[in-house]
Length: 175
Image 1 (cartoon, helix red, strand yellow):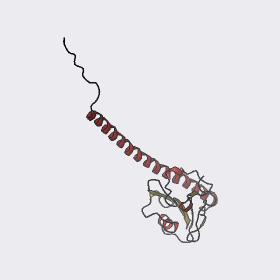
Image 2 (cartoon, rainbow, N blue to C red):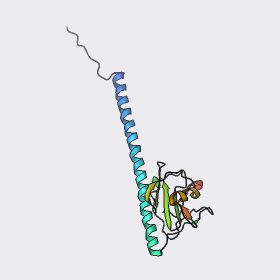
Image 3 (cartoon, helix red, strand yellow):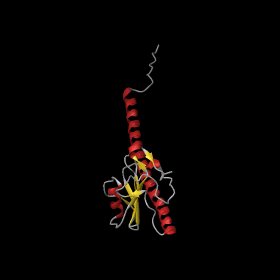
Image 4 (cartoon, one colour):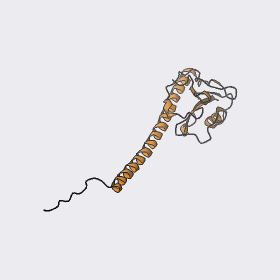
């Protein structure tokens, strides 16, 4: 009689390892692509928020003949709170960094600027002098940021900010 040979069905360990490596490579590529897309979305949301609130500020200026003032005079207080005369704005809070006082409004000398730190760490600002731009300096407190965004200003500068890092809270500026 003839003996029948049975070939063992299944995969070898090498074949299984190759499949696992290929899956790991595809997962790594997907994670990198997602992170880039999420970062760009965060930056776009911050830029859109700055444009939109700037329109509200410009509308206030048309109706009142001046830009709204910040919460406090620069160098004299915390400035934590809303822009005086402008209703709170629904910022896309998830797009912003919470590592600093992330949204700052500055007004003075017939000009205004509002700047923000995106979750990616990029800083953008909108000013009467130049529209929307990426902020080139180091983002710190309003005493440093306001002159950097407004440029040369005579008179008092007022400021407000929307997020206070010290107690992880959003002010009334942000809905």
